[in-house]
Length: 219
Ligand SMILES: Nc1ncnc2c1ncn2[C@@H]1O[C@H](COP(=O)(O)OP(=O)(O)OP(=O)(O)O)[C@@H](O)[C@H]1O
Ligand SMILES: [Mg+2]
Image (spheres, rainbow, N blue to C red):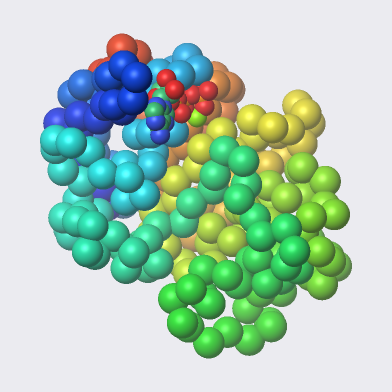
């Protein structure tokens, strides 16, 4: 089992308390893919952030590769086990394409050769843009950089939040196909948040988040 989440509960307390997750459990085997669907605002990004140790639940637990996630080991788990593809890319706009792709290695203080970054860029068809400032790329190209970056530290688990949400239909399909082929090629486990039923159908199972609980839609 690469990931096991049990009885997650999360609410945000501001002017009014909003319970986003009331009791969510899920598990994922190595090499498998799982889609999380659900309407806007149901808590998909919140759930993905908790699964990726970027946020913590009020109750419940997340175990990744057999390690119980805690605030003190979260950064290490993220560096070594998790590759994140964010809803809005979160690339460093003033850095080059190559620098962005190798950033996870830099954060993990792992020395890299230029070749390693070029190989990742080759996989997403952007090798000729290696020294280009990321801020000048198109949305679809940025998404491909984000996919390459997620693979940099060879994590076993990829978490992708609407990886095609900001793109036109053709670019969305090509980003999605790219993601799935890389996940398959490297035998990675994938949790994919998406509004798109066609994309969800490419995963081994589909779950729907609604009113704080996660239900299996398709097995
Ligand atoms: N930091 C926060 N403080 C207060 N409320 C928050 C916070 N983050 C999220 N929320 C609320 O939690 C709910 C779930 O948000 P979330 O971003 O997880 O939804 P989502 O399913 O990813 O939506 P979308 O499909 O639009 O991306 C929303 O109502 C949102 O307003
Ligand atoms: Mg979201």
